Length: 606
Image 1 (cartoon, rainbow, N blue to C red):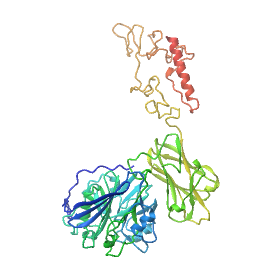
Image 2 (cartoon, rainbow, N blue to C red):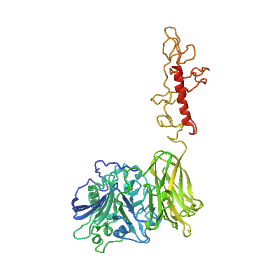
Image 3 (cartoon, one colour):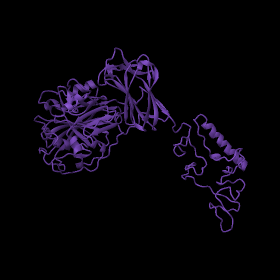
């Protein structure tokens, strides 16, 4: 999971390109505030210097049922209000800058877990000569996490900032994390890990050098997150009317700082700036922003679904949807770790399968997944686990269903012939890490032809531990009474084995050696009274009755070639401290037998 660092004091920095400490010219007056949906606060501000309306939707990402969604790769444009209604979200804002022919955005884009094809993004090599190529930053929303990647300009000037999230500073146009469900890009960057971008003069050529239109006043849109990654800010500034002047990029950055954004990006603005709320409609003057031409249709959008009592999708502080114990577990399609994506009308459910419930959909020929499902996997203990899926003979029939397994940061795809058999089917054995950010998914797309009535099913998956683990009743070589007392209970300390057998914090500590003259000495030389004391029970001194070399009653004296403890065996090297190591089938019985022998010996010696 990502953990966001709390920001420090806002840094003021000056450098040759014209940046300086914040001027604090923009002031915001709160005009109204409402809660149209659980977890959503809608605010209306009036800004001065410049005079313009500012609309803010604050979304609590840890509120029950909150999920961020973004546009799937489109073939045509759509207004924010139209997309919001079709997507079933409760709040929506316009996304990245875009072009048509084909419809494409300046940066990356992912909608419902499906990345846009390269030719519809600013990463396609055919657009390398375009001025916007690889300049973007992004927000990425995944399971229990919110990630971001800084813009190219910020990464190339990292020395000007105090950057904590170092992973984001190395690679321009960095790959999004595995398991990203929604991603929208933007630039310029407005706030960089708590540091607000500021300019001496907002129209100077050194102010936002990565794009010139930031030095003009326009309607604008921006998205930001707070330092904990638990509050999403969706902001629109109106303009192009007598009432609303719009803002320079530097003024928008100042606004995002006033709203406590830790990271914020400039999204598409001008006539594209729209904020829509279910039940409220488009709350800002979107038509005025578009020179009175109504709400503009745009390429992509960012929206928030509020599901009521369900588990939040992107809350970094949320407990695991299910913590898989060391032996393994079965995860069903009715559990909180399951998710189904894509157009809901193409998902069907049936009262069959595990727990008498499964999802199914049709496979189809495509280079991009449409309907797909996953089971998030979070492990209590790292180890090797076999991964299986449950196939149903009626609904699991496609001969080349694609499964994706992400284990400990490694992604592996494989095609499965679902019609070959039914019941539990193995996907192989994988090394899973402790914790989350791991999953198994099944997709409906296939690059080649797909016959009619080819179904995939999403029912249940099962993970089973391979090899030893704490709690399997076998004391493995890498376990001890301190790390796994259930399998390796404390025993009598054994000399010279380099192990703290009795878990008292001391390794191979010697017991007191008792001699016939009453002296206790670990030296083997002769003391002042002429007696020869030794640290062992054999040699010139003889141990007192019932004593042993270690000073423990009833313990066999090593290498004495006698049954000194009357236990029925010669030279028990481990005495009562022997621990049974077997295949787990008789470990408990041997342990009980050892304890019984130990008790018998002590009764005889007493």
